[in-house]
Image 1 (cartoon, one colour):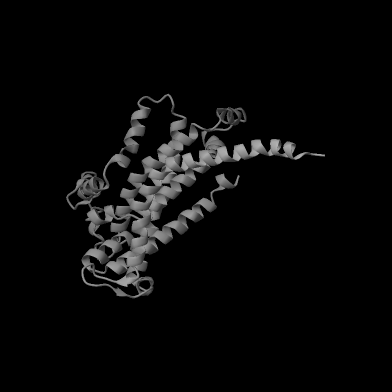
Image 2: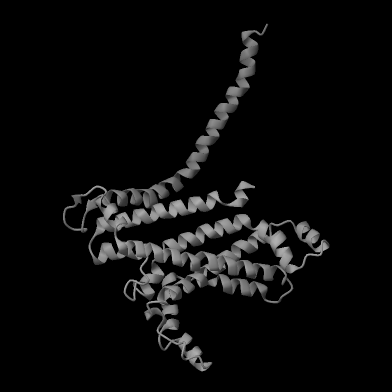
Length: 309
């Protein structure tokens, strides 16, 4: 028979472990507390406050009127907002798809060009747009795209002046022109992520591929690309978010023009709040944009084959 003393002796270490674990959990939460405070003060509270304002018809000055979900129904039925989201879908091609494809190509080249001189300098140059303020980038590219800017002058110099045009003033080309700026911005981020991922791939896999007679292209698709699946998922998440929430480039370069050919949801938020004095409607658009970003990022994480493996 097991006596009470023996039972108590066995359970004592377990209870000590539990109390010790609880104490370490409290210490961990204390370390995380400053981050929670910053998150709540600068992200969670503004988001909840914006959600509350979106339920009112308010111009920012006079007393607000409760409209419930009226701002959301109006926004969802607004053709201008649907057009803005369609423009964001186009920008995802330039902000996410093109940078990832180009960065993968550069990664494949750089992994086989380890003996190339000044390779680190090339990496820094490609990543440089990430550390330059977006307003500076937009201002610089606006000057490049100007009717008498660098791009048109180069086209004229090589005999292609027939192609020259006011790029940001063309209804059909303004959005792709802005999108190419996003491609230039995001390619450095993708490249750094992919190069970091390549350094984590087991070198023996490359040796095995070479022993099997694989060339550079086959080696890339058989070893490098599968090994970069987690980094591709991260790059896709970051770049898609950048494309959906784009505002600064649009605001500085085109202000949504010509006409409404480059409007995006982020610019719609600004336009409704500060140009039309529809603060409640602007908050509703902002909340809808947040929901879309959450849905898209969740889908990207769900389909990441690297997490399912």
